[in-house]
Structures are given as structure tokens and as C-alpha cells.
Amino acid sequence: MANLPPLSLHIPEPSARPGEQSGVAAVQLPEPGETRRPDTLAVEADMRDLPFGLIRVLDDQGVAVGPWIPSVSPDLLRHGLRSMMLTRIFDDRLFRAHRQGKTSFYMKSTGEEAIGAAQSMVLGGGDMCFPTYRVMSWLHARGYPLTEMVNQVFSNEKDPLKGRQLPILYSARAYGFYSLSGNVGSRFGHAVGWAMASAYKGDDKIALAYIGEGTTAEGDFHEALTFASVYHAPCILCVTNNQWAISSYSGIAGGDETTFAAKAIAYGIPGLRVDGNDFLAVWAATEWAAERARSNKGATLIELYTYRAAGHSTSDDPTKYRPADEPEAWPLGDPIERLKQHLITLREWDEDRHAMLADELDQLVRVAVKEAEAVGTLGKSKPPVSEMFEGVFKEPDWRVIEQRRELGV
Image (cartoon, rainbow, N blue to C red; front, side):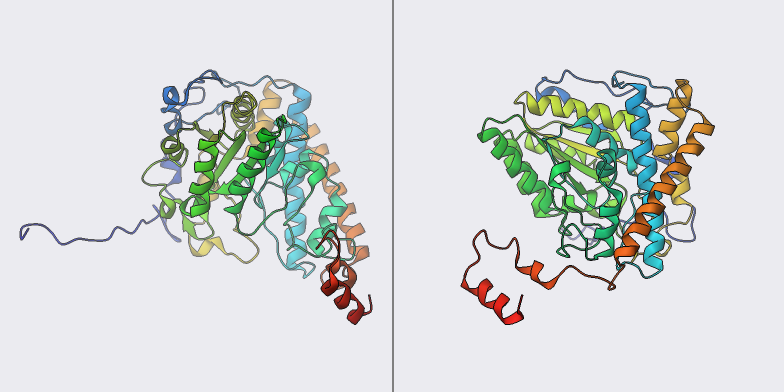
């Protein structure tokens, strides 16, 4: 024992800090089309290599290659592109609104728009998404009214959630979008429970949920995977690995030790690792997992490998903890540019049409913001006080009745 070195505690450190050159460009990635595609109904034990690959469809020229190419019409691809562009334009406009004091908080999805848009389009209208705050493209892909979205961000009198949620924590049951929660890990448990209930009732609906890679270090993640595995819950559990959990890099959650998709192996469910900046790859992997869930083969864990190009929120300054060049150095590029290039390669799009669509969407967002501003921005108008008593109990009890009487509402 005397000859052993003293113990030392390992503290994970990112490859570069502010003022240094980012190391993300040197990340080793499988080539597009390299990762195999197993049969949807294959047993999990025969696909334990998949968490260590990376499902990629689009190459650097925008050409779709390999076994994961999905069958998606040009019209659907254009709709996906539109949804992604709308998300980014909406984010930029509302981010500026925050800086102008019109709302208290905002979070952008920059660089992650392909995830919500593709998965929203793959799943059915009766399926349920248990979201995080960076999949607003899910709602844009399904045509959620822009003015209602801005009203919620401004927390004004016409806020569809009646002031019960923070800005950007949307809830839209009619759009398959379960209420957001700042306690991100709860989304997995709720999704698994919802999926189990669907199976128990003999229904045909499935659930999809998101958490960030940092949340995999929390108990909610492991509890949900246990139930999903044991009860073969028909759900798709997505870990959005965007490299940063606020200011903590992915290594703090174990990303330096193995992939997040590999955590599925311990629970006996398939794990897929997917290029989250590739609309076609996200579509294909989601379609595969959905078909498996609907065939009573249970849950799939998908790691969506992407990058959070903007700050965590309006309260965050990423230049304090990561190199300034890191977003541009990210080797998997911009999801909007990549889908745009693919459509151009197919001769289904061009630069002029792209510019026209960008102008059209910018105008739509401007109109929605003006309509919401007419109702009121932060603190200028609010839902009526009486709303706080609604939707609490199915039948108001004596305490609610007495409280309403005291307020005179």
C-alpha cells in the first residue's frame, strides 16, 4: 500500500475556455451514411453498436446518402424548412423585444430548429410531445398562431395560459404540446406515464419527450428509463445534447466517458445517436422509433447531437465560459443551411425563393408582435385577477368561494 500514489479527484474540463481556440472542429464523426439501419423490430441486443455511431444522411454537398434516407416529399421538406426559418426569425424578434423591456425572459433555439420541426412532422396529431424550451419549431411546424405565442411571451391580457406560466413555457394540447416545465427532468417521467396509460387503454397514441444532456445526471432520467424499459412504454425519449447545460459542459454529465445514447444499453432499450443538425436524419430516426413504439416494441432513447449556438437564455452570457468561435466551428453546421442546400441540390429550391420566404416570414412575425403589443407588453396589461381561481378544482370548494368573495370577483 505504501507504494501506491495518493488518490486524486478527476474534475472534467472542456477542451477550451474563453480566449482560446475551440476544439469542437476536431471532433471525430462517422461519415454520412456510415451508421447501419437495423430492422425496426430487431431485438435490442443486436443493435448495441448504434449508440456509438452517428446517424447522418446529408453530406457536405447537401446530398442524401446511406441506409437512413427517409421518404419525404419536396413539399414536406419545404414545410420543414419554412418552420425552421420561422422559428429563427421569431426567436430573433422576441429576443430583441426582451432587450427593449417588453418581456421578462426569453430563450432561443438557434442551431436546434431541425429537431422540433422534423419530429413534429413525423408524429401524429394525437401523439403527445413533452417538450423542453428549445423545441418551439414543433409548434411552428403545426401552425400554432403567432400572435397567441407572442401574447404568452408578453404575459398580457390575452395570454392563452392566463399568466400561469413564465414566458416561452407554452402549453398547447390541441397541438400535441404538453405544458413546459422549468424542472426539465420531469418531462421524461410524465411522458413515460402518459405512454403507459395509452398502452393500458389499448389506444394507438405514443409520447415523445425531451431533456438536455445535463439532465441525464438527475434521478428523473433514470427512474423514467426504468419504467419505460420494464413496461415497454410506447415512447421516444430524446436527449438533446447541445454541449452546454447553461455554463456546464457535457462532460460534467458524463459526456467524456461515453455517449448519452449508450445509457440505453443498461435498460435494455435501443439507443440511437443522431446528427441533430440534419433534418433528414432526425426525421428518419424518429420515424424508426415511432414505428417500433407502435409495434409494441417499447421505448427508444435518442441522443440528438447538436450545438446550442446562442446563450442559454436572456440571463446568460456564453462568452464567459466558452470560446467565442465555437458556434461557427461546430462541424455539423447550420440545420437551416443544410436543408436549404439539400433542396437546391434536388432542384426544388433556389436562393431567390429562400430570400422571398425569409422576407415573408419576417413580415408575419412583425405583424404578430404588433398585434400583441396593442394588447400590452410586460406589465402593461394582465389577465383578470379572477383567472387565478379558474381551473384549480373541478368543483370550487368553500375556500376558493370565500377567497373570491373577499376579492370581490
